[in-house]
Image 1 (cartoon, rainbow, N blue to C red):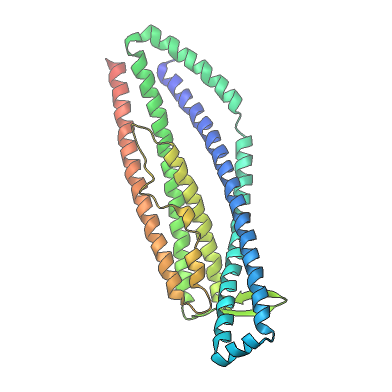
Image 2 (cartoon, rainbow, N blue to C red; image 1 turned 135 degrees about the vertical axis):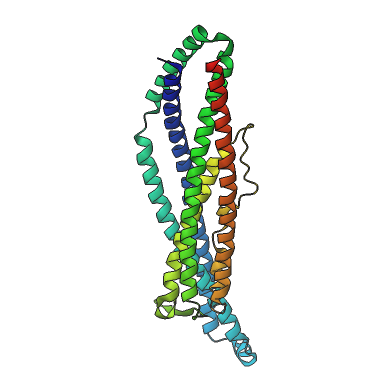
Length: 317
C-alpha cells in the first residue's frame, strides 16, 4: 500500500476517533450543564417561596402594615416583591426549557457515540502505523521522521479546521435565533409592562395579546443556540497546538449570557427597549467571535497548504 493511501486511511481513522472523543467530552459537559440548571431551578424556587410568604404577610393586618399604608410604602414594597417574583418565575421557566433541550442533545450524543467502535479503530490504526514505519524505512529512511511529523500535523490541522467550521455554523445559527428574538421584541415594544397577578397560589405573568410570550420562546431558542455555540468553541480551544494557537481570551464566554439581565429588564416596571439593547449587545459579541473564528480558519488553511507543499517536495526530491 502506497504512503498516500496509508495516510488517507490514517486520517479517516483519526477523524472517527476524534469524533468519538469529542462526543464523549460534550456528553460530560452537557451532564454538568443539566446539573447546574437543576441547581438554578431549585435555588429560584426556594427564593420564590420566600417571596410568596412575605407577600402573604403584606396582605395580612398589622400595625406596621397600617403605618406603611398611611405612608404609601406598602404598595411600593408589594410591587417590588411581585416584580422580583415575576423575574424568578421567568428564570424557572427558562431553566426548565434549557434542561429539556440539553437532555435531548445528550440523547443524540449517546446515540452517535454508540455507532463508533473505538476499539476496532485503534486496532486498525496500529496496523497502519506498522505499515507506515516499514514503508518509510525502505523508501526514504532519512526523511521518515519529518514525514511522520508532517503527517500528524496535517491530521491535526484538518481536524482543527473541521472544528472551526462547526463552531462557525453554530455561531451563524445563534445569530439567526438572536435576530428572530430581536424582531419579536421589536414588534412587542408597544407593551411596556408585564401584567403580574396571583392565580391558584402561584405567581404568574402574562402579556397582553401574548406578544412577549412569543418573544420569550424566541429568546429561549437564542439561548440554547448560544449554549451550543459555546460548547463548539470549547472544542476549538481544545484543538489548539503550539504551532497554531486558538486563544479563547478574545472569545465571549457565552455561558455567562444566561440572560439574567434580560429577565430583570422584563420586570413589571421596566421597558422592553432595555431587553432589545441587551439582545443587540449579544449579537455584536457573536459577530465578533465568528470573525475571530474566520481568521483562525484562514490561518489554519494556509498552514495546511504549507504542510502539503513540504510533503510534496520531499516525495518529489
